[in-house]
Image (cartoon, rainbow, N blue to C red; front, side, top):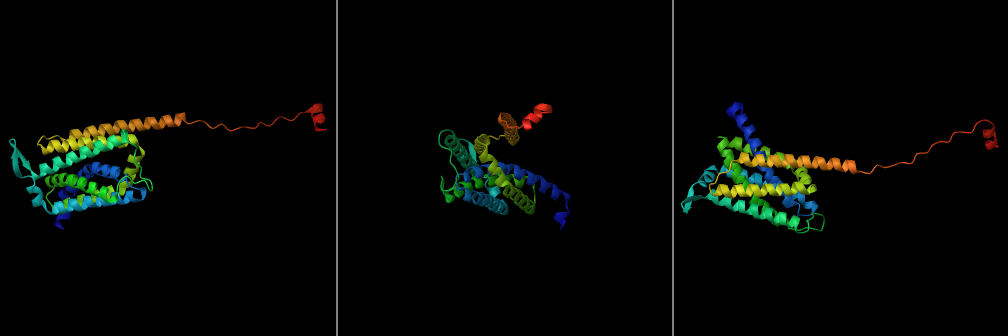
Length: 264
């Protein structure tokens, strides 16, 4: 009860929830891109299972804080550089993101765009879930380490993660539909994943890149893309052909002697 009446608890919960949502946006975008390879009837299920896995992984990692903190300890040295378990996971996850995003970009530009229509699956449900699980593991570790640095109470961390994942579950369908219906937005999202993958690899090699720079670049790109979409929408409205409807004009009745003659 004392925890609930402490104002610092609510401030930490609000701040951490916002941060978890920001960190989870790239996660849900990539989940949406992967799920789009499945038949339409399975896409929502894949997104929900993927976000459910993310929730379970983050809660389990939070409940094993001592193990997570132990991942930052030095395992061995390479060329005078300390290598920890966290470094290995970040480098491996970053390389996975770089490889997967590059493959998706190549498939979109050089190959035929995969469709998720009935009977046109380009991947199995299990295969997609495995890829989502690998992705969740990488992002969950980063998310949990951030949470540990911002809050002291496990209950606050778990509550923030649950609220953030709940919000992502509620908006997953809308985000997926928007990304899949706009090819330029999908390409921009894949570019973000390349950027995030590069930052994870750099962080694994102790080359720290401030996340503020990354989020500024992503935010500016989104702003430019929003302007492009608005311009495109206006062009569509202007170029839409105007439908001409025939109008019938009633002829005036003849008057006087001519009118009587016509009537006869």
